[in-house]
Length: 165
Image (cartoon, rainbow, N blue to C red; front, side, top):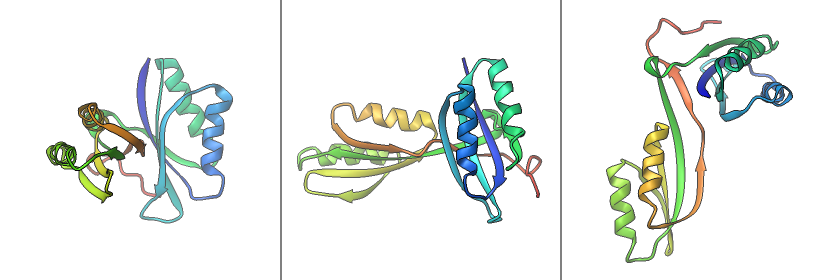
């Protein structure tokens, strides 16, 4: 099983995300993560999908998604030619005696403390998946109360693969 990251440029119409995820559901394909947001041109939405399967399934996914009416462009974002980022927000239970330890770990990873309560901290961290996974692993001795991850957003490097519509 391999993972692939696909970047889609789609029409910004109601139901477009539902139609794309429905295709995955009907065909039995798995979505590891999906993110969507407007582009510089509000007529279009950029969707980043991380999916996994063998080579045949991954090729089939790309072909089936490309056939959808709303899809204007689909590209594979290869790790060596792309930049991926993910956002994580992590709420950690901390008493006064533990707070400095959590803050020290956050500083090492250049994470931000975005909320402080008497018994917890909320930490915001951006980076690639391995950075976020490593940060969470270091919090093993602390109680993670809540965790929210956005999934990957990505863009290809340079200007040669930019799609102009």
